[in-house]
Length: 352
Image: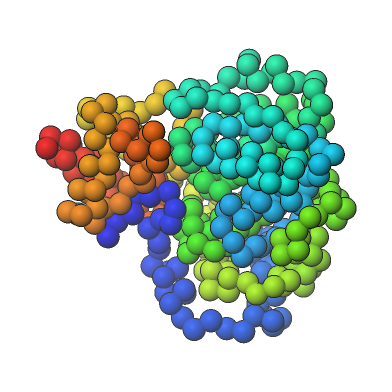
């Protein structure tokens, strides 16, 4: 089985070995020290300024989206949400649930984000900007430097979902002025699902202390317990053990090398697949994945044949995009030779 998916992804042998062992008891000094290591390495990998807080949640990326909103925004706020796909829409649904006023900057399928059009939202009554650094449903990557500057100019809390972008695209919390940043274990970290990592600026920490409307995901509680390297509740222990190994490896070689690896895979695949009768949307794309469009609207049929005949899994799309788009992930334990095989099989299946 080979996963060219956007999560879970093809896992590394070291991770599989760790996650296959008996779990230890975690209310110990040893586990606390391990989690302090993870805090240091993760915050370093996103260039977090001094004083940034860290929380390791037991949930998926959507749990972190929910937590980010519930801890930092109230009904007295007004959020601006970049809605360019399924996950931008999800931010809007979360704000709707908590009765937080919001507007959306809507981007149509295959449409690129427009900095010029977005400037029309400046100097208004917003208090926060929410964005998926990469909306994985389309693969579109947003310019965090531009958005960070926009937030500084308009005094907005900057909340960034980096679930798919972390380790695939450059992220710099200090330079980009990010207040809340989070990712999840099953993406470029290449671990089992079930853990989300959150970084919080001092501004966001203060909001969480004053405004949290959630018990299980209370960021202030996580920050207080993390002082001794412990979560307030039972952690995804096996995933945390594998996270420690993975972050140690990334810290040793440098996050720039990990990002360069994803960039290499993305560039290689896009050049190879361009020879086939498929299309890649003309929008800024994340290194985490490549959306491929099927003019004959046979995406579902090709997906099924790759899965059934070769145990190769791509990421399907839903709704109106079901037969038009598949997404090819570049995260996890994949080689350039794996992409050679995939492109060859795609070519064969497109001829049927």
